[in-house]
Image (cartoon, rainbow, N blue to C red):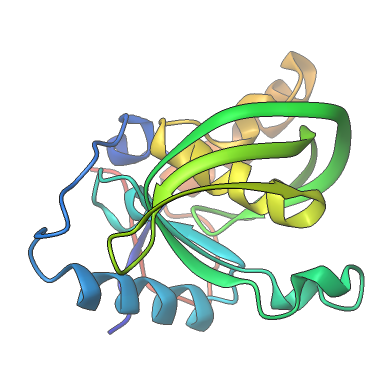
Amino acid sequence: MFLPIVVYGHPTLRKVSEDITMDYPELNKFIQDMFYTMDEADGVGLAAPQVGRNIRIFTVDANAFEEIDPDCKGFRKAFINAHILERWGDETNRNEGCLSIPGIHEDVRRKEHIRIAYMNEKGEQLEEEYSGIKAWIIQHEYDHLDGILFTDHLSALKKRLLKNKLNNISLGKFKAAYRVILPK
């Protein structure tokens, strides 16, 4: 089932999400709905706050970057109760967009490597390291769990230049090819 995506200005996007237990109601269905929503909206990641739930879950699918980075082939997974333990290496500038901020894409600097602890869909506790595009996608989705949007990483000047566009999104003055929930 497609889950409507909350857009810029919605208070859910600014709240810090909480860990859950594996007996969270209909957890497997929710994760499958997140994957479906992400796919239908042409996203490479989706965090639970983007569909109105402040719980620490996000999904990723890096297959779209396979031609740039062959290591991305088949990288499709859910992260439950994710916590980044470490970030290191050079900062890389990459262009980012967000399903909750339709029509805006900007360059964002992020660390090249991360180490993350999380549970998979089977409830197994894992700790893994990721680099490059995988680390970039994970960091973007992880930020959502802490109430951070990619626009928060921009310079003060960039933020001022985007202010009207962001306000228009919160007012529903934008086009998206998927169902959304506007701020109240």
